[in-house]
Image (cartoon, rainbow, N blue to C red):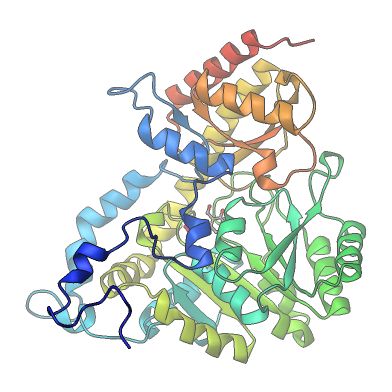
Amino acid sequence: MPPSNFSSSNGGNNLVSTFDSTKVVPVSAMAAALAKPDQSPYYIAFDKVRADAYNHLTNPNGIIQLGLSENTLSLDLINEWLMKNLNDSLCRGSDFGYNIDKLAPYQPFDGTKELKEVMASFMSQVLGKTIKFVPSQIVLTCGANPANEMLCNCVADPGDAFLVPAPYYPGFNRDMKIRTTVELIPVHTRSSDNFIVTIEALDEAYNQAIKQGKRVKGLLFANPANPVGTMFGRETLHNLLDFAREKNIHIISDEIYAGSRYGNEQFVSMAEIIEARSMDKDRVHIVYGLSKDLCIPGFRLGVVYTWNQDVLIASKKFTRFCSVPLPIQQILISMLSDTKFTQNFLKVNQERLRKRYDLFVEGLEKLGLGYTKGSAGLYCWVNMSRLMSSNDEKGELELWEKLLNIAKISVTPGAACHSSEPGWFRCCFAKLSEKDVSLTIERIRKVEETCNVSG
Ligand SMILES: Cc1ncc(COP(=O)(O)O)c(C=O)c1O
């Protein structure tokens, strides 16, 4: 029987007149949660900056963006390369016009063989020259975020948990949790340890999680660390692997900043550690991408590198939802094959990062603000607790609001990164010109004047 408000005798015309416009058609719980306004200061600030972004010519009183991990310092080099090579890279292999056979048809979603080959060489160049990355162990994705999420789906089930040394990249909460519904358990670190995680802290977090009936499936971290800018040494990496073996869990090592170094320390990839410990290969997965080291987040190129055959095959199937468009792949094949360009780019970009970092911390020192000595990444982890009215999360968020609304600089408060010590803020300096650095420091000074600062 048709529903009472449906009349078939007039061809269903009554449908319009009897429709109850107050009734909302329900969406999924996931969509409903996503549709709500963001609560994290990390995202709130993005919206504010979008509406009033600083531009030294057109909006000099706008908000300066230090909350986004983006590097524009070397975009001139990318632009120069594209001006010279873009057309050729899209025509490669064709005598006439664009090589449409390489641009238009379906291709394997996990990336072309050619791009995997040049990516394997580029990863050796960046993550460690002694490491031989095998192209067939690479899965290409549209950015590192989908790579992380995909791995999460491969090693954990809904409700399972990951241990994540904190402070950690605020985006992990969104990227790793929303669709997978896994739980991220922050493992706290201390400024006195330079925010490097200890095995004692990992053990404690693990045992507590197990006591609460949680199923811990992995350890997730960014190395170089976002937001602190430090790198894990060989010994720490061995200890992390020992821990993972003992608990029989996975490791996801996100190494997206490996080439964005500005200190003198050498970067050590988990891939190098695993070379000597082949029995642990199945539990280690590396995430990489070009968003940071080549300054091209808009190209959306990420990598999963895994030794685990099940994870490899499953990841390839997941790329149906996150594949890299072929024109982008063609451009990147040409760019990454141009090793003269990539070598020079990495060198120049690192020099520029170092200069901008030095200038930024010089300004902080003049203000008497402490910071963690970083050696990689696009940001500085700054201790502004001196400017807070109270040494707790409330004081931190109050200062964050002052910085945003009075000083008009957008930074990421430590609370958004699950920092256990209030007063730390992540400041991305790699989008700032030299003049913008001075202006930023001047704006922080203005906030200092409004604070009741004691010594
Ligand atoms: C540690 C880390 N992983 C992943 C990403 C996301 O990279 P992509 O833009 O390639 O998705 C970021 C971006 O800030 C990051 O800091």
